[in-house]
Length: 221
Image 1 (cartoon, rainbow, N blue to C red):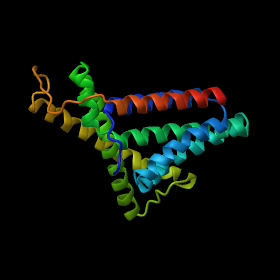
Image 2 (image 1 turned 180 degrees about the vertical axis):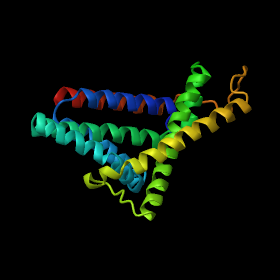
Image 3 (image 1 turned 45 degrees about the vertical axis):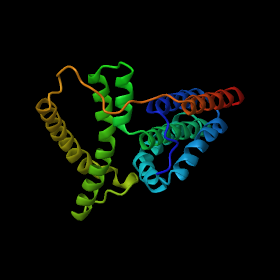
Image 4 (image 1 turned 90 degrees about the vertical axis):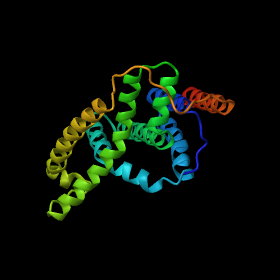
């Protein structure tokens, strides 16, 4: 996958800047402008299929909030809510696809962040992909049993067949992770890092361009 190979901390700052900007803007045009760089990065990194699967996972959430907004507010607010959720989900997707959890945790630990915090962040990000894989496995298994877990409102009543096994597997995975951490001496002192991360001019330029674009969108829209 082609990337700019930015410092993990730069990727995190860029994602935070764009998240704050897309949370503050209020116009539909600004949200559409905020979605364009995400789509460009997805196509440039050749992640269209993965992004499509990601959208299918959040489609029900977007549709639910849009319907609630249409019934209680107006259609313009409903479109804004739907676009905002889509943009924020896209930011999260791009961040996960361009920054490995190990690199992000190592860079933060190099800055002096306690290892317990960096490990929690790293493990959380790693399990996003693991949970996505397990969700697909559960859906395939339940479909083989005749349970229609297709995206949409008609399948909503069958979702407990997905959520209950996923919750059970999550508890089992957490128990196994805790045992593995203790077996590897999680609480010991004197840890060292294998990789040393360096903030370069390219990272500064990327963060600066992102901040400038966010300010322009916020001021114009």
